Amino acid sequence: MMSVRVPPESVAMPTHHPHDELLVDYAAGACGEGEGLFVATHLALCPSCRTRMDVYEHIGGSLLEDVAPEPMSTGSLDAVMAMIGTGESAPEPARAPRPAAQAAGGPPLLPRPLRDYVTGDLAALPWRTVMRGVDTVSLALADRRVRARLLRIRDGVAVPTHTHAGSEYTLVLAGGFTDEHGQYLRGDCAISDQEVTHRPVADLGEDCLCLTVTDAPLKLTGRFSRLLNPFLRKF
Amino acid sequence: MPLDQCIIGLPSLAVGAWKPFYGAMDERLNDKPNGTGGEVSLNDLLVAVGEQRDRTAFAAIFGHFAPRIKAYLMRRGADQQTAEEVVQEVMVTLWRRADRYDPGQADASTWVFTIARNKRIDLLRRERRPELDPDDPALTPAANPAADDVVKATQDAGRIRSALRVLPDEQKELLHMAFFEDKPHSVIATERNLPLGTVKSRIRLAMTRLRKELREEG
Image 1 (cartoon, helix red, strand yellow):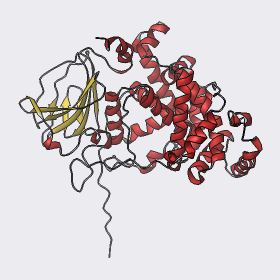
Image 2 (tube, one colour):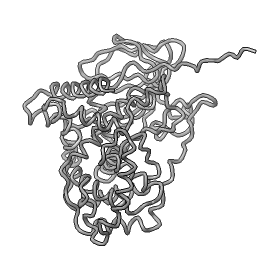
Image 3 (cartoon, chains in turn blue, red):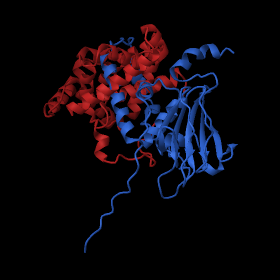
Image 4 (cartoon, one colour):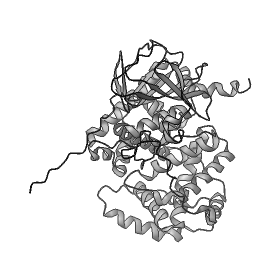
């Protein structure tokens, strides 16, 4: 009897990726929480950026090898030896599984980094309607300088032409949208700033679900924000 | 790896106490085609910590990495004392997590770097760092599973190092600042008297160049 081999269902790979500076910042530990959430979620959906990230983290490892060492003070190894000698130094348990937030059978819709911010069923979240066919829900970031939201655009709905006061990072999680710059599907990133004006239209057939990360009105993002932050906290 | 670095801060542990161990490592390394000595033995030491909870190997790992992590933290703005406290936390985490270290995935330096980086965010910036979960069922797998292995840790760590060496100085310097100095791109741009766009494009050029070097050598 002939056996029929079914090829594994092909998964579309993202074609719009974050730029290198953002990935390098993430590898270097220079991203804020919001940008970090954006990058980590994209990585889950993009094997080619995972490979890029491997290379960038190896750069960190290489630089660590080459740095001029700062001698530790006498007794510091003894102190650490004492710390690992106690019960608290037992091997660390693996991370606890989180509820899958949807989809029995198939892979969960939301990759892990996002599931840490979205508990329970997507439909049960406190969605707020922005305009007809466009709903949004805020994610609770500890970092108040940026806002992270899920955005749900009903299929076929056009978001009015807009530009951005600061930067806006959009990552498609389901469905897709099309604008002047191309089509964006699951895993694709669109990064806009003041210079970009666009009019995204959700593709037909499925609602478009996105993660968006935007600057607070003061445009405090990434590396620049941390420079100003100590001053702003006083107000 | 200079032997004397491995006993810093541990007067009670003589070099001889772990030398036979190091020697055994060396013998095993001779069987490996691309064994480069230092790095590979660090990988093996880290595996020994994970598998055998080997304290002598841990002391050697401490001797090599603790002063480097301290330098990293100080370069990024921590004072002496804070840096030492964070180093201790990093080393305890390393001890607790070493059983999950996979030398096929990352070389020891890279693995230790990621722990130090995350601890710094956690303890000094007091921020949460969203992380990829490699076991996430939602992970989109590579179309060609081998593609995930393009970067094969041990030999590639060496290749990345030599690729870094051939970068133009201006790109090398920017990468160094990105990883080791707490300076926003905008400040780097001002200091170098460069437009911000140039700083960003140099980082992109450096990455394109690195990826090209890796493809050509691989």
